[in-house]
Length: 124
Ligand code: HEM
Image (cartoon, rainbow, N blue to C red; front, top):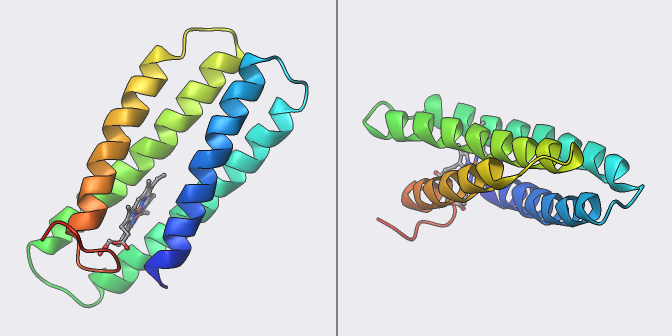
């Protein structure tokens, strides 16, 4: 499993998440359908991330293991935050709590992803 497939999956997921958010906001009747596609992407993001995680866990036995664990939890948190944001806007509730979580979780996960050795390794 390569990191580029994972990156493609979450990049498309986040773009469609943003599109879906504004469609709900504008009460577009197709927003529910797009929301289902975003949910499908959650699964693809999780599977590609989990396969990376699994591949690494078979090979390493050092402190990076824990950082990879945090990376997985962080990734799940980003997904949860996207879903919370979309569900609240779809019900006409204030989406601020979802947005705040999304931004915090995304920054943490971006930092962790770029600190870990595979693929982009910007923060060594
Ligand atoms: C929307 C949610 C997610 C975002 C924004 C995200 C973001 C990232 C980023 C920026 C990287 C670094 C790519 C690279 O180094 O080339 C990465 C790598 C990785 N992600 Fe995710 N991820 C998400 C979800 C997940 C999930 C759910 C899992 C686990 C089930 C996961 C596991 C991994 C693993 C194991 C790596 C490889 C780390 C490395 O050594 O570079 N990710 N992700």
